[in-house]
Amino acid sequence: MGISDFVFASSFDNSQEYCTYDNPVILQNEDYSYSLMFILSRQSQLLKQLSFSNIEDLIVRVISHETIHVVIGKLEGRDTSDKLDDLEINFSFDIGRTHIIRMNFLGYADDDTGLVTSML
Image (cartoon, rainbow, N blue to C red; front, side, top):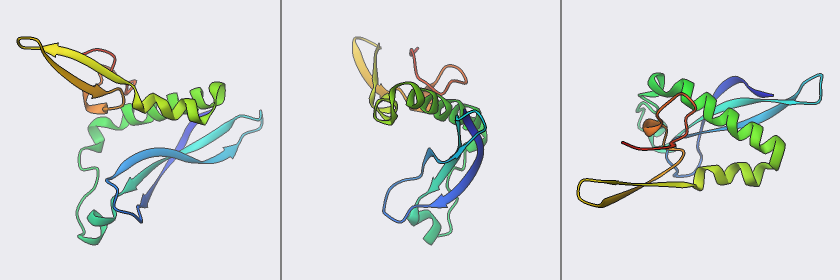
């Protein structure tokens, strides 16, 4: 169970590029394996611009993050798994200023899980 390969696809709406998992393949033991999908923005494709220009630095976190979604989806269902991305982390800096960031903002993760668990 987890991510077994990756694919690139182009968005047909005006969304920004993003990663997700899909294309389930059933394995011998009734578990599923998924493709890590890099969805390229429609605009970047039309303008022949590079999407995911910094993906090499984040690929381990992306795979880990989407695998966590797969596992939670197996245990609790896809709706619960998708809510993981809506969780927010609040942290203070300077003189009481508060910053809010979503738990799935991979660039702020402190390890290769791809989850933001604490800041500064």
